[in-house]
Amino acid sequence: MKSITINGSQRESVGKTSTKALRNAGQVPCVLYGGDKPLHFSAPELAFSKLVYTANAHTVVIALDNGEKYDAVMQDIQFHPVTDRILHIDFYQIHENKEITMEIPVKTVGVSKGVLNGGNLRMPYRKLRVKAIPSKLPDFIEVDITPLKIGTKLYINEIANDDYKFMHPDNIVVCQVRRSRLAIVDAEDDEEEEGAEGVEGTAAEGTATPEGGADAPAAEAAQE
Image 1 (cartoon, rainbow, N blue to C red):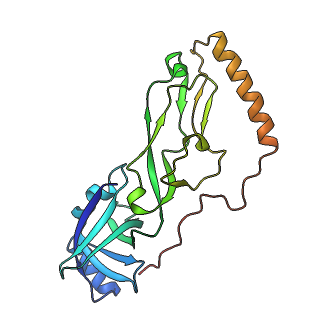
Image 2 (cartoon, rainbow, N blue to C red; image 1 turned 90 degrees about the horizontal axis):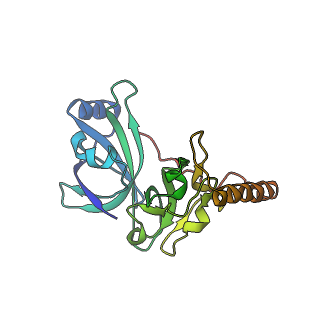
Image 3 (cartoon, rainbow, N blue to C red; image 1 turned 30 degrees about the vertical axis):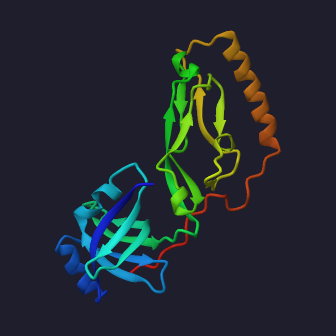
């Protein structure tokens, strides 16, 4: 996975007055968790543009002016409700031998027969939560939609990977092709759609989602 370097300065004062002064100066107050103790630092707001305003997933190298560097991932971010300026960011320090959980964007490849026949491609999830050691985290999750016909679905267990683990139930639909009013359906597509609906109905009656779900958010970070 690609990494972005954030150059910042360690903070000694963490009160409301000093935080407000930082924001007025165009700096973003941040906290790095996961080490021996929380590390408070700040960096220019523009330094986070490639990290925040993108659909891609990145790890971060936090380079402080005292020469210390930390590998991390962004855990939480707060925006101003009116101006959308970044108010605060929490990071979590990562270690090569410890697994972490991240949301990774989904990228489709190919063109499905169902879409060519006028069907609509639906993707309930633009990002999927995966767990792996940092070196195994992918930049994106590639999904081949070529085999999908009208009425067929692609489940998350069909794109399993040995490098990482999906933190979702196996019955989660990653993408599907649904019939539209203008769709042209041949006999083969029509038979597959009816068969898929029948199987889905049978499976739904006997499937129970784990209590609390498998896509629980990460532990809440302490706020300033």
